Image 1 (cartoon, rainbow, N blue to C red):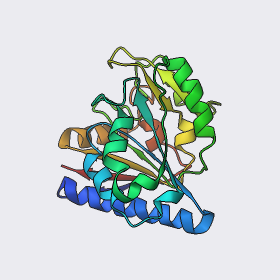
Image 2: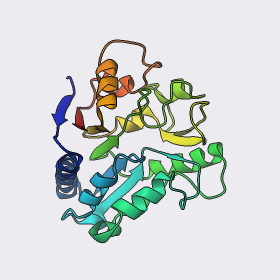
Image 3: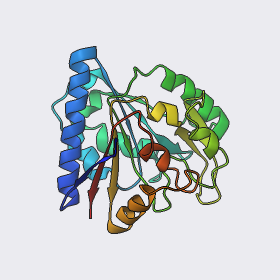
Length: 232
């Protein structure tokens, strides 16, 4: 079940198409189950997509939104994924969605992960869609090759939903969903932009150690369909 690849001429075109596909999945779950859940990633890449999705004609009061991962920073920081989601996605019609954050103010990584683990357990699953990004080092979520708990995070049998992650390659400690939770979805959408990331993606789709490029834990599994959305 190789990933589907969708390539677009512009980032605006990608944002519109990805938003439309996710809106369709959310509507389908609302129609069949009465509610829908969505997990999204942060960083600079999804801003246009968030803006497009926020305008979708969905009964947002029936949608639960959470994060794939977040940095332990205040929500006012430009590095906060929660802050990004609240300002760019949970606006306009989408403001009616319920947001489940991963981080709590003033908590350390382990306490934050424990609290998030309990909150994520209450989110109706499977998710309609889990939206992932990818770094130029081949990480996704906060699964860094030099992360102190990366092996646990990408273990298909990991019993935890959320764990803390520290890595020398990043500034702040993080909290992140684990692989079993990421795979508890109808679809994984991998959203990447730029020629450099396409080259990294091609490398990640080739055989190699998962710990070297943790995004392979998603790309190489056969449990959930993966759709790749790319623009220059």
